[in-house]
Length: 281
Image (cartoon, rainbow, N blue to C red; front, side, top):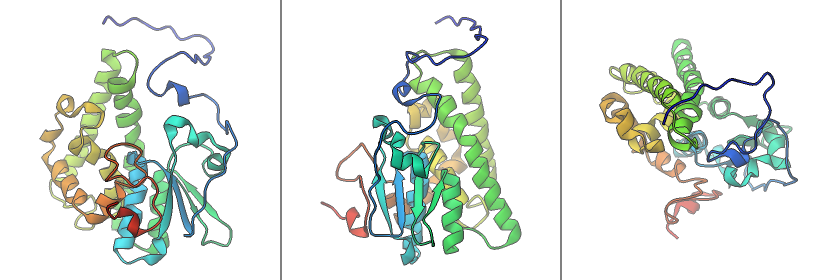
């Protein structure tokens, strides 16, 4: 398909007919579209999410905390179906004005504490429970650097490459090449770091690994966007080794199942309220 030059208008206006897989839920304004209260379970930690990479980050950490014996990390997890616009309900917008999953409410504090943005939730929980965040000053800085590196990198893989390669109504060479190059560069950054380190901060498994695994693990292990061959993800052998080691952890396997809207009904846990929700039905 021949590409044409687009001349931007002097003032951009919203074209509701722009198309694409997520056209029906994207809009240039914030705020609620409808009234909808959120359910509240019995545990202090209430999570409202979906098992996208950003959502998986939080459920994996919560399951890792429980695996480590932190009973205070028990949580209720409710599905927010972004395809149906649940993220624009008034209750969810009150927790996250940006209308993106995941969002957390901690009711163990004197007044309920809302936390939104997946990286902020990981840091909040790691600090609250004193787990998966190094206490050594230099290692802590290394951990936070890789955590925020991932937060800044994910849009290139998801909203950039994933959108133009898999979801855009038309395929154009320039944006696909531009974002494929950046995804490969970022994956090479991880691959070089992991060549001499078991985890991103050395020998210690941290929230930096959890955050990066959620996206890069999906890339190299689960053919996200159907692009495994196109991006030659198998060539990043250090990332593959690291992702496989993380995915073998029982807590990670549980966390990946929580708030999953599709797939095998026998393995997904649409809502999570206790460990028994993972038992075979």
